Every structure is written in structure tokens, then in C-alpha cells.
Image (tube, rainbow, N blue to C red; front, side):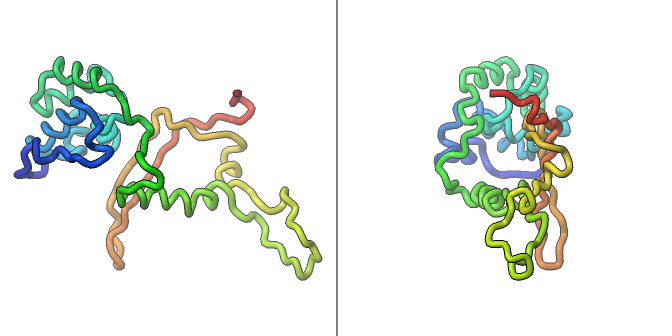
Length: 195
């Protein structure tokens, strides 16, 4: 467990999106700061992943009553009081990143990563064509792009239901790297997707 001299009140941030998270989130952040613990500590105590725990704090994930009891017990809060505050606050920021492009530097870098690497992950050039030798002036669509994901799974989409996200530190001589892993656990064939 990490040590922290920060009081709960000092931890509450006033800029967006933190100022709008509601009393449930503020209660959680305050209790976490007072205890001087990490999301990982809380996750280990309740048998959940640290990123999922953080998503509860930010109003992005919905905890079960058992999760609420476990978090409350770990953070020395009333389970009934925490449950009541979370229900009252609701999950007002679920899926909301705030202004676009994001202003928070870390969220902006994640956004930038998707903007830069989204299509290379989704679509890659499958065949390098030489216009000089083929005489083509246009690349035939069927021969140019091939989805990396679709090559491995077929046509369809990923589901974020029960998605697991891991954040790790990877040592590197040029400076430690942030290793993000997203585990999408369900692939829906486009033949099953409707509407």
C-alpha cells in the first residue's frame, strides 16, 4: 500500500471532468486518499482488476452490491452510505471523454494513439503494388486493404462487455514504457449484428 499525506478534501479536483463526477465519486476518491492506497490495493482486496476499480471511481463501471460492500469495507466506509451515494450520483460520465480532442494530456495521448494507429490496426496494406510495372492508375479495392483484425477473426466487431484492461510498466533503455493491454472477450460476426 502506498503512503500519502494528502487529505481527502485536497484530492478532490475542480477541473472537468472531475468536478462533475458526483458525490459518490468524491466520497470514493476522498476515502482512497485518506487511506493512502492505490487502485491495485483495492482491486486485490475485492478480487477485481485495478483498472476496473478506477472505472468505478470515475463513474464508468457499475459495481455489484458485493463490489460496493468490498470497496466500502476496504476504505472504511458505510456500505449502505456508499451504495446510496453511488445510486444518487448515477453513472453520468459513462463513455464521456469531455471535450474533443481531449485536454487532459494522458487521455489526449490515448486518443492520439487511436487516431494514428486505429486504421493501421483495423486496416493495413495487404499488398504493395508497383504502378510502374502494372500500369494501374487505381488500386483495386479488393487487393489493397485487408483488416488485420478481420484476418484473424472474420468480419465483425469487438465487444467492450467484460473487457479487461491492464496497465503495466515495461523497462526500456530509452525510458520505461507504458504497456496497455485491452482484452476484448467477445467477437460478434457481422452476420449476427443487426440494426
